[in-house]
Every structure is written in C-alpha cells, then in structure tokens.
Amino acid sequence: MTHKIAFKTALIFILLLTAGCAKHVTSIQKPPPKAPVVKAQPIELVIINRKAESIQPVFSASKKKPPKPLTIWDRMVSLYKISDISNKRINREYQWYLKHPEYLERIQKRAAPYLYNILEQIETKGLPGELALLPAVESAFRPHAHSRKKAAGLWQFIPSTGRHFGLKQNWWYDGRRDVFASTEAATQYLKQLSNSFKGDWLLALASYNAGKSRINRAIRNNRRKHKSTDYWSLRLPKETMNYVPRLLAIAKIFADAKTLNISLLDIPNQPAFVSVDVGSQLSLAKAAKLADMTLDEFFKFNPGFNRWHTAPNGPHRLLIPVNKAEKFKQKLAELPKNQRIQWRRHKIRSGENLSLIAKKYRTSVKSIREVNRMASNFIHAGRYLLIPTTSNKQLHHPFRSKKTRKRTKRRLYIVKKGDTFWDISRKFAISSKKLALWNKLSLKSILQPGQKLIIKNI
Image 1 (tube, rainbow, N blue to C red):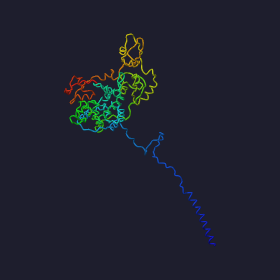
Image 2: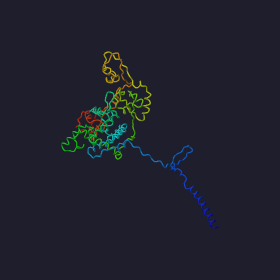
Image 3: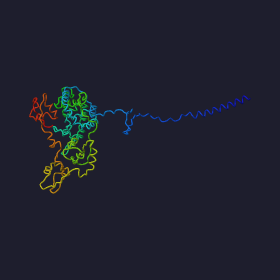
Image 4: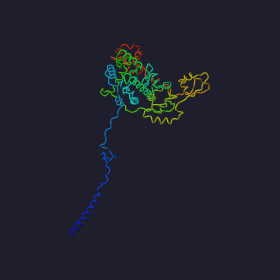
C-alpha cells in the first residue's frame, strides 16, 4: 500500500513537471519577427580637405563611365536599309567624293541645322536612313537653291509637285524652301513612291528624280523586250542614271568615314531648332532681333519667306534655334501687338490704281488686297490703304539682296589636269550646263590644264 501511494505521488509530480515544461516550450515555439533586410549600399570613400572645407570623392564602387552619346551620323547610319551594291557607276561617284574632301566638309556644315529634323521624319515614316543625304545630291543642302527647271529648296520640288503636297507658293512665302514643311512633304512623297514600286527604293529614287511616269515607261519598254526591269537595266536620262549611284556613294562614304579617315563634324543627336507659332503677321527683321540673331542666321532657319513679313494669312510658324527659343518667346509676349509690323497709311489720290501704288512701295497688288481685305482691285480716291513697310532699306529676301549678290560675284577657276565639266560643277554645286554656258563652251569641249573658267554662283 505504501508503495502504491509512493508511486501515485511520483506520477503526479512527473505530470506536473511535464505540464510546466510544455507550457514553457509553447511560449518559445514562435520565432520573433524578422528585422527588415537592408541591402548594403556601395560605400564611397572620401578625403576631407579641411583647408578647403570640402569633401572630395576618391572611389565609388557604383560609378561607371556613361556611354558616349550618339552623334547625328551614328543615328543616320544605324537607319540604313538599302543593300550594299557593287556597281561601276557607284564606284565612280565614290571615288569622286574621296578626291574632294572639301566638298564633304562643306556638305556637313550646311546640313548641321537640318539633319535632326530630317532623321525624325525619316524614322517616323520608316524610311531608309540613306535618304537623309538626298538633299546633298539635290541641292548640296542649300535651302535657297533653285534649278533651271524651277525646282527649289533642300528637296528641289518643282512648283506643281510642291503644291500637290501642300507646299504654299505665293508672293509672301514659298513652302518649297521651308526646311520643315518641305522635309515633311519630301518624306511623304518618297514613301508613296516606295509603295508604288513595291518597296524597291532604287526605282523610287529614280522616279523622284525623273518622275514616276518616266520610270514606268522604261519598265514597260524592257518588259516588251523581255529584259530585266530593275533600276540598273533601265534606259533612263543620263541625270537619272547618275542620280541614284550618287546617293548610294555618298551614303557609303559616311558609313565608311572612320575607315577612310574622313573627319565628321561632331553634330549631337539633338534638335537644332523648335517651331514657334507667333500667331499673327510679324516683321521678320523684328523677329530676328527678338531672337538675338543676324538676318543671315535667321533666314538660314526660315528661308521660306519671300518678304520682310510673314504673310497676312500665314503661315506664322518660325523656326528658332533651341538655345534662343525661350528668350524669343518671352520677348515676343512682351511686344505690343501694334508693334509687330510697321504700316504705312496711304491716301488714295485721283488717277491712282493698285498697280501704281504697289510699284511705289515695292510690293504687290495681291499683298495690298490681302492686307486690306479687298474683294477686287477697285479703289476710291480719298480713302486709305494700309501698306506693310520695314525700316530696313533692303526690302527683299536676304538671299536675293545686294549683299548676297556681292558674295556670288564671279571668279575664275584654273582647270587642273583631269578636270571635267562634271567635276568642276560638282565642286561648286552648280550645273554643268550653266558652267558651259557662262564660258560660251559646249559640254563636249575638251578642257585644257591652265584654262580659265568663269564661276558665278559660289
């Protein structure tokens, strides 16, 4: 009995002890909440220069050299799409460019303000990057260039094609010379031509030069003769035969510039200008002053204007260099509206007509009618007309001014061994026919070393 009581007592003691231990274990089974993990940050070692009271970084584990920004040329070449072609016509043009590095340098300088906008339009429409150099072939990147066929601007639109693509042409303004509007029109036109020839860019480029109907006619002739209808097999005008190879050659030159040791201007891949809507008619001389630009600088960006004011009915868009745009906008906002343009109040005299009045003020009948909102040429003696004027003595576009004519004064060129009409005309961005005409020669004439030739428009 005594043993049983002892056993029960021991059992009770063990049970009580076990319960206490279980209670204790339960309280520590849940681990404490984890502290948030903080990632180690790179440590920057510094030296404190007590004399200068400054902190100078010595080493940073997280700093890397930023990639070198792309130049405009890098971007252009990255957009190339036309296959590399081996052809003697391309090679001839290629060799000409190599022999005239000064021409390539001149082209780059002229292209600098316009290339970013051209590439923007090209990339947006999915066109080949080679087309950015088409103005080099068309106009040598001169926005005021005119041809004997009445083509004008960077992209050399003839009047009818320009109007078809929405480029206004009037007494006040010529959209073919507007570097923004003409680029939009040219890239749209080139895209249409590519679609017409099912993506064949060589035929599209040939048709840009000679016209779509001329290329289609050449294709039909080859089909009738069971000949190939690719660009290289077509019988085309001589100019068109050289036109496409010329573009492909200069595109190849820029792609190979590093290998060929040709220096390229460091033009950043950034916009050179912004478009500013001035809202109403504005004196361009005043606009240049507000933008802190010389007139020559101003018309480099805005060569589409023919007169000293924007047109009464627009466009009123001006292209202003990026680094001058904010200041220009601020000054324009502060300019009173009655000072945007200078007016002359003309009292109509008996016997006068619009033609006489226009001649007196060196303006046009159409412009007087536009400004005064006249439905006809009929005028009344004693009434008044508003005539836009300028304080500047030069009433015409700077590219046509006396100052410009002095720059384009004739000079003599001494013929070198191996020179041809074509070589010399390319060097000065003129036509071979004009060069021959100025010198009373035939294009078949043989040039002799030492012979003197007149060059008029450089």
